[in-house]
Amino acid sequence: MTRWFTAPLLLAGLLATLVATPGGGRAEAAPAAFVHPGVLVSRGQLDFTREKVTAGAQPWKNAFDQMKASRYASLTRVPKPRAVVECGSYSNPDYGCTDEREDALAAYTLSLAWYVTRDSRYAEKAIEIMDAWSGVITDHTNSNAPLQTGWAGSSWPRAAEIIRYTYTGWPQARVDRFKAMLRTVYLPEVANGSQSNGNWELSMTEAALGIAVFLEDRAAYDKAVATFRGRVPAYIYLASDGALPKAAPGSGLDTRDELVRYWQGQTTFVDGLTQETCRDLTHTGYGLSAISHIAETGRIQGQDLYPEVADRLRHALGLQAKYELGEPVPSWLCGGTLKDHLGPVTEVGFNALNGRMGYAMTNTQKYTEAARPAGTNNLFVAWETLTHAGNSR
Image (cartoon, rainbow, N blue to C red; front, top):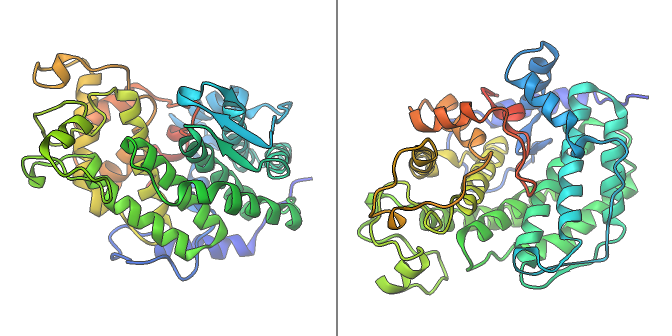
């Protein structure tokens, strides 16, 4: 039987509209009352998505069909929880790493499928997966533990927010157990950030912020925003920074040589260059995606972070997109060679900066539209054409 909240969610949707309007003023701290669902996607955005898919409008219908056909939307999925997830560098060894990330993505995918279709089987499967993990996992270990926790910890609260606040079939005791899992297993691993490559800290901060929203933990929320505000200027360069990029707070990068090494040996800095551009575009995409996700969640919660990062983010998306579109890489940039590809990571930032804020973003627009419908990177990015293309809510 389909279970659906009515009046309480209408009130929540109205509140989301009132507090999440771009340009409504800068909020310096966590909201007095958190907006739910409010991690990456709001109720208004979910309604927009459902309306477009139901009407058969493009690109949303194709995006939904792609999602529904994926393994993450399977109603026969069997979750594979384990007590200790051990992840070494590049997930080697992989003791539960892939299983955890994919189950978390599946829970989010199923929650979206539930919202669009109102088929309670999707909600029940999402609950089954979340309950399976919350009843078993106790720790993440080995060198990639912080990043693994950040990736899975970004997807879990997105799913939990949608199910908890739009479906009545998740027993309160299991909701509380899931909250306990996030608070004791995930949040301590990601809350204090990282001095590794910037995509680590940004992904960990995304997880910390989403978890804080679901837990309604104002202190954890404020801490995540503070980390974000310190890291973004140290991840994306602007000429206004001076001759050298900014150093992340606490990084200990005090000299030019240290900064150049940290920026993969790059010595010429231009607007939109990232700390990992010369490493490869895939890791760069992780960082840019996490920045967009954090800003999007903040906006929903009434703390619009986009104006603070707009110039950096739009230049970064545009610079990387330009070379993804085939422009020759100059010799001064990463020795004339860029590795790998961004992946499906531009929809959220492009929608916010171009669609809501009105920035012209020619390269990013071409790249984004050519890649539609954006799928998943199988880590923590999923179905963003469906949820964010042209979505001004």
